Every structure is written in C-alpha cells, then in structure tokens.
Image (cartoon, rainbow, N blue to C red; front, side, top):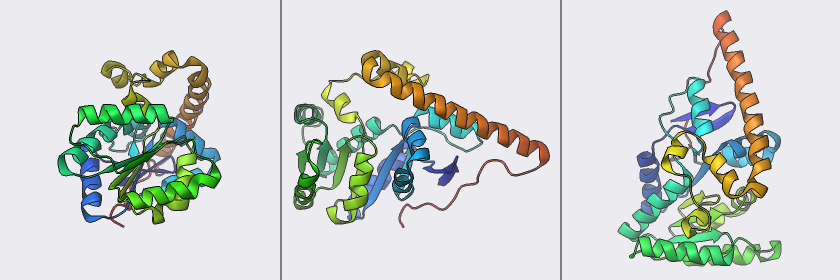
Length: 264
C-alpha cells in the first residue's frame, strides 16, 4: 500500500512482502526498482527536485530508517515495520543462492567489493554472481559499465553508490539495463565486507543506529547526521503541529494512501 509521508511516497510493506515482490520480478523478468528511504535521503529530497522525482518514480519506496518509521506512525499512517536495506540485501542474496538467481554488485571500492562478494559466497555457498564493478568509474566509462550489466544477464542489481549518484545513474539507464530487480544499498557493501560494523540489534531498535555510525566514523558522519536529523525533526514537528490544528478545527490531517506503482 502506497501512502504519502510529508509529500514523499512510501510503501507500507513488510520485509516478507518486499522479498516476495522482488522474487516475482526476477521470476517474470519484470523490472522493479526499489528505494530505501532514510532521514538523510528524505531531507535531501526537499532541496533536490531531481532526487525527489527519482524516488517518486521508483516502484517500491521502503521505510529504511527508524526516524521515517516513527514519523509515519506519529502522523497516523499504519506503518508496522521498517525494511532496512542491509537486511533486504541479505534476504535477497539468500533467495538468489536458493533459487539460482544471479546478482550484480555495483559500487564501493574494488577492495571492499571483492571482500563483500567473498563473504557473501562464504555465507551462501551456492551463490553465483552475474558480475560486478566498483563505483569509482569516470563519466566517460559509464557506457562501458552499462554494457557490462546488460551482457551479464543479471537477475538483480545492487548499487552501493552515494545519493544522488546512484539515483541519477538509474534514471538515465534503468530502462536499458535489462535487469528485473534493481535496488540501491547505500553502505551495505561495507557492512557485508566487514569494513564497517553494523550497530547491535538493541541499538537499532532504539533508533540510534546513526549514533553508532558517528562513533565509528566521526569525521565523515558527524556533520551529515547533525544537519539531516535536526532538519527532519523540525519538518516533522511542524507537520504534527499543523495536524493538531487541523484536528482542532475539523480540517483534514494525515494524507490517505495513494495508488501503488507496484506492478504498474
């Protein structure tokens, strides 16, 4: 079910439902693009119309961050759970290994990418990769990367490049890649490779995974989270205040669910 969260589309799906949609896309060779929405991406969309359009044009927009989940619930949307991108990647790699689908990894440094693939093979011995390419290619090399993905006959494409670069890449090329299921995975390759540790489950449940990232990479992550979290809190509080006033005076509050793009 697609809903509108502060003018941003989100799909209120469980992990199991999302995995099943991805399996169906791979089985039928039907293109399905997935976006994982966290606070940083949501805030960046407010000042980047192209990024906002890229997200809106995706087939599935999952709730990746706890901040988005809590915000959606606060505004009255029936959001039951998050679908964290790193967890969805693990689930889909297991599906690929079990059912014979072949993934393509795009992104990260060559060393991180190779380590991530090696650890994935160790975890899922029957997993076979369709191909891979690091994310540090120049604009003039982009066509070569596209051709490599096309010729790989991959069933799913996981892209570990920064926002909005991966969204721009997909907006330009997704119709010609020939890959059924496409998903941006952010920094999940680093976690899979073991170069970045994921927060313990208890910290994730408290919504403090961002704080754990700052602890690991203070120089790179401090300013990002300080700015995006503050801006998000302000946007959400303003929306909650407007909703409260609307309820008081009998005007509409939360935006009702809209039509889904899934299967369209």
